[in-house]
Length: 422
View 1 (cartoon, rainbow, N blue to C red):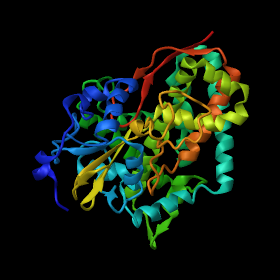
View 2 (cartoon, rainbow, N blue to C red):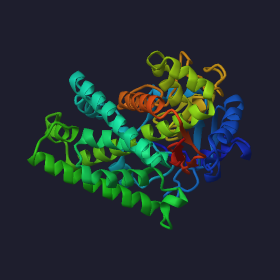
View 3 (tube, helix red, strand yellow):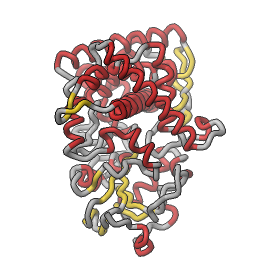
C-alpha cells in the first residue's frame, strides 16, 4: 500500500479556524466544537487536515481526511473493503505493538473479524441476555440506594461509573476485588492526553501502564478460567475454537482490554450527559416522566445522539476512491466525526434541540453501520433505561453542578460532576 505522505502538500486544506486536529480544539466544549463542525459540514464536509497534535509518536502521515457529514460517515462505515480497520482505528499515530495489543476485533477486517465477532456474540443467547438485563436492573437499584444514602458527592463516582463497571466485569467474570483496578486502568486507556489524568507522566507512559495492567488482568483471568470454568464470557473465549484453533492468550487478553474499555466508557459518559441534559431541559424531563414506559426507548436514542459518547474513529483507504467529492488515495487516513454526523441538519430537524420524542433518530453513536457496529449496543441501552428509571422515580430532587470534562479526541468524557439531593 502506498503512503500518502510524499504527496500530501497538494491536498486542499481548510483555513486554520476549521482545524480539528489540535489539542486546543478537543479542549473546547461540545457546543464550541459544533461551531466548527457546522462550518465544515457546509463548506468542506471531507477536508484534508494536519496530523493530530499530542500523538504518542511522530506521525507517519502528512495529514488525514476529516469526515463531518452523516451520509459520508455512513458510506465509509459500510464499505469496509475500501475503508479498512486493520491498519489502525485511532485518530492519531499509535505504536504498532500497542495498537495490536489493544485493538482486538475493532482493529480487524473480515474474514477474521467476522469469525471472532460471531464467537463473542455467541455468548449473548436469549436466555443470557434476559438474565443480564435483570442483573442490570437489580444493580441500578443498588447504585441509587447508595446515592440516596450519600445525599451528595461526585455523580460520576456515585452513579455513572459503578453500573457499567459492574456489568462488564460481571460479564467477563472478573473478581469483585479487581474491578476498581480494571476500571482505573480502562480510564487511562482513553484519557492519556488529559493533564490531570497523566499527573506528570508522559502520555505514552500513561497508555502503556494502563495497557500492560489490563493485559495482565486478562491473562490471569484466562488462566484461572481454564482451571475453573464458569458461566461467563472469559470461559467461552478460552474454550472456543476459530477455524479449528484455540484463541491465543494474546488474543484473549486483547479481547479483555477492548471489552473493559468499551464497556466502561460509553454507558458511564452517556449517563452523566443524560442527567445534565435532563436538568438543563426541564420540559423534556417532564415529557419523559409523564410516560416513562412509553417514551424511554426514544429518549435513550436521543441521549445517545446528544452525548455522542464515542467521538471519533479512523479508517485507512485500501484503494483510490472518492468520498464527498474528494479524491481519496490508497493509504490515506479517513477520520469519522460522530458528534458532527449526529448534528447534521441534512438528517436531523433542529439538531441543536434536545428532543426526547425525536423519531426517526438515525444517530451514529454506535457507529455508522457495517461490520464494526457496536457489539454491546443493547447492553448500553439497557443500562441507560435501568439507571434513568431509578433516578427519575426514586431521586427526583437530584441536582448536578457544572461538569469537569475530559480532554480527549476519542470519548466525550465527564471526569467529575458534583451532585446533591435536595
